[in-house]
Every structure is written in C-alpha cells, then in structure tokens.
Length: 110
Length: 116
Image 1 (cartoon, rainbow over the protein chains, first blue to last red):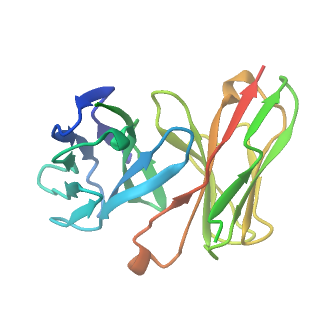
Image 2: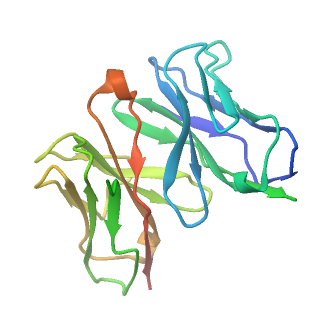
C-alpha cells in the first residue's frame, strides 16, 4: 500500500546549522508530495508541496525536490533558527487519501 | 475566516461513555477528514467525506462513527469509549479542485481526548 518513510528523530541542531530531514515514498501512481509542520500545541500547517517529478517546493527558507528516480522528497534548510523547532511530517497524496510519515521532532538550540 | 475549528479542545471520558467531536470549516470545502495522532505513529485516517451526506472508512475506523449532514460540519462519534482511543484528534478539509489546489489539506487545532 501507500506509505511514507521519514527520518526518525529527535533531531537537535545549533542555530544557523544546515538541516536535512530525509523522506521516501511509495511510487504507485503519480502522488503529490507535501511537508507539513506542527508547532507545539497546534494543528498541522502546510509548509511546502510538489506535484510532479523535478518540482521544487519552497517556503520560509525550506526546500524539497520531488525526485522520482530515488522516490525521495528530502526537506532542507540552509540556516535554521530557534523558531523552526517543531515536528515535521512528510506526506503523499494518492487514492483520495493523504498518507503521513511518523514525524521528525526538530529542536534548535541557540 | 476561522478556517477549521474543532470543539471541544480537551475531554476526559470514562471507559464506556460516549461523545461527539465537532469539526466546522468555513472555506466551502467539499472534502473533510478525521485523523488521530499517536506518539511514533504519525497521523492515521479514521474516516473521511467527499461531500455532504457521504462518508467513507479510512485506515483505523473501528470504534468510531461519522456524519456529514451539512457541508461545513463533520462529526466524529465514539459510542463506547475505550482507553485505546486516548489520542489527539485532528480534523482537516480540502477543496475538490485538485488541479488548482493540489490536494492541500487544512487542519484544525486538535482535540485531546483521554479515556480512563
């Protein structure tokens, strides 16, 4: 079935460090891919998306590229801030449903 | 626009009690979803609806029922609560215009339910 596998956390980085959170997905059909972010005590918010191969989604300094050949959608940011501390979810949309990874908790220390 | 709202925000139930969680959206979205979030398991789809008067089972539907009598509301019911249903519940909605909105879902703030 449809699935998403993402890097297990927690991840702790110093401010201004480079961030990568890995995500791979099952390649059945032509899924759309998403990264959602969940700040403490809140619901999920869409961070970025890509709808076809080689598309790059970007928002708030975060980027992810839809790689069909490696079935990956890794999240990257060049210089993280304390305010980026949150849980990040990779997701794929197919068969009318959004399938989530298990989430990666990111903590940025000053 | 309030977006997606959920009531209540917190609830404690005893085993065997029943309750209904209400989700409301003001974006005129056709699709609505109920998820549960448990530690280490991400979000799992309980039930969803593709339009007023229609519902369908998701990944973990057992022990839950839903109704979509109005387009803007999606109710999740627990008829006889069990400790295994302790979780955080999220409602989401999305447009049916797939081409323009690319399946993006908008989430409510969540309901934290504890069953003792």
